[in-house]
Image (cartoon, rainbow, N blue to C red; front, side):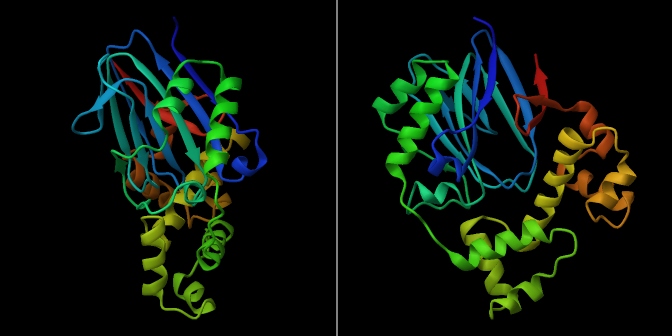
Amino acid sequence: MADIFKTFKPKEPTVAKYVDYYYLDIKPENEFSGFRCFPHYNSTISLYRSHKRGKDNVQFYDKNAGPLQIFTPVREKMLEVKQVGRVHRIVIVFHLLGIQQFYRDLNFSAYILGFDFFNKAQLSCLFQTADPAMLTDLLDQYLLERYIEWEHPLLNEAVQSVFDQYGAFSVEQLAREYGISRRHLNRIFKDHIGVSVKKLQTIVRFRKALERKLFFYPEENFTQLAYALDFSDQAHLNKTFEKLTQYAPRQFFQKGTRLGREDTFWHLDQI
């Protein structure tokens, strides 16, 4: 069986409002592989078929192990993942604040291990197929069964402001609009998202730069990219990329691999 990496979108409209996409990652002959993924405002649930988790984000295949379920919150730093042995993994990629619509009473500002996001019967069904259409139907169904609308009007509006005004943005001014202190606004963001308002703004602008370069204007030079995203100049763009990825923009894009049809853009390592 060949390696598989496929991305696919939810079809159920309610789920699609809160889930960006799913992906399937199968490497039946894997001995060791690794990847580095970068800051993102999404969050994910990763479902491994028969794995144990070691130190430093190492996932070990163990045929006698049960499924491994991992929630990864909004990432403000580069994340390095290592996979030892064969891999069968299904991942749900949530929009920002999307997971709150399906699960309650969990701290989504941090990693979550040891929690059953899906039960044994559901996991068994999910791991019996590698057909994206069937997986889409199953995941849509299981999530829809858990759906309870979650609302936080102030947070939702503030997050939208970050996405709309990522270039010239004042946290102090945003807080005043809601009649609260900057400190209180940051506390709300950290409690529910795990990062401050300013940090989220930095992540959003980085991802918008990545998406612009990958999907819309691949021939655009980095000076043009910097000004299109309201960086003060290319040096500012370079500094942001180096801080978030450890690479200057040119090196970052040269080393990266886009997997599937969505914004999964990783630096891959294989031995």
